[in-house]
Image 1 (cartoon, rainbow, N blue to C red):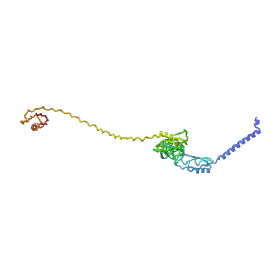
Image 2: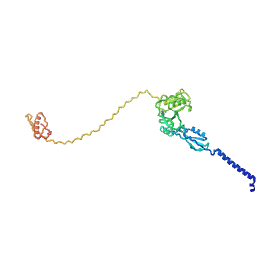
Image 3: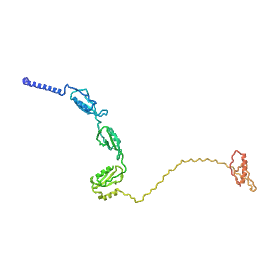
Length: 365
């Protein structure tokens, strides 16, 4: 076996294989040096604060590749201004290396408009502010949805939920101010169901019951009856019921009369009007506070002196009754007797000046 290894043919093949291997390795390294520019380096130019257009032109002239990335918008810098770069300036790289530059965008990144339609305006405003939209004008429009957000407007055009707008865009909102009162109901008799829907919607009412005579849903059927009737006044948002048929209203006169007996009740005005009397105004009674009754004074009974009877005298003789010192007559029966009593009283007063005379009854017979 050793003899076969040292055969000149085997040795020749081995030498050829080694030479081929060494040649491939040498060629590989040479190709790598050529492809990677081994030993060749160039400085990275400074493109910070330049516009993205100037920065791209400088990198291309230098022989470097570039990649542009936009950061979050910063209003302190100009639009499309280069804010950062990697590798940094003055670094040495090989020709054809990739340089990544960060550029300030033209404006804020767009955001998605949230679904705030038909929501309460207070909550809708809060949600719009959270996503970065600014409320401009608030327009009030008559609607049965009072204080609800009806539409979002951007530059005068309606914006649907899900649309994308620049962050911090100024939008206008339409808010419901409540239903309008006493709106005249339009006449839709003789129109098709489709036309009646448009007229009722334009008049700020809603479609209620739509009854087709044949039970179909054909929008081309003709309206032959409506409730409430045209000319009546209702508030915005009230429903209008419709009756439709393929026949004209003139052909359905009996049906119209039947519906009138149900929905158009006639008021009998032949009776005399009822007279109502006005109720007099009720006068509130004046309640005076009770007055305290005076406390009665206790009377001390006075002791009466003993009655004395004067002696019987003849009136003809002109005799006068004589009083004593104990008797104090006050009144007399006749004028002649009064003069005698006065004399007796004066005499008594002279005797007792400090005492007040007491009344006594004198009986004269």
